[in-house]
Length: 147
Image (cartoon, rainbow, N blue to C red; front, side):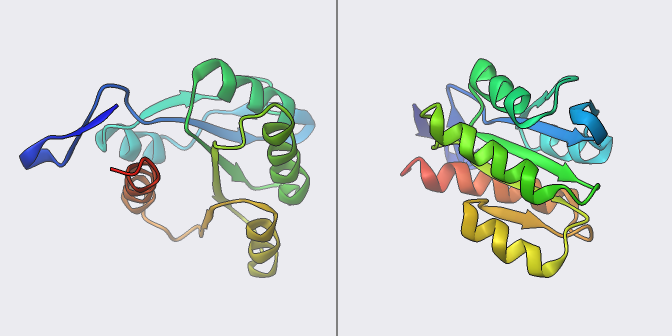
């Protein structure tokens, strides 16, 4: 349930929760970039690290377990189509298609359109300031809640 809170805009009984993933080769992962985690945290967004299993199945399991509204994937290895596609397919199969999938990293411009057609909501370029991505998340969750 979300309510208005005058000066500070929105007050939430449940914070926005984002699972951040930075998959590496073999489905393992490392921590999300600290500057991104810091920007999201300062914006009042709860950040959940995806853990060691950052395969599509592992990421979706974390999203479901944590009750996250958004998953943010940093793709640096050129495997973005399989990774994002796998996550989207599993979210749909498990009936949690309402989870917003966003990402960034090293993704060619031509591939961004393909990912968005597939169902990825937003891809941030490597030049996007972390605070701008955090602001987008806050606005998107607020707008999609109908408040």
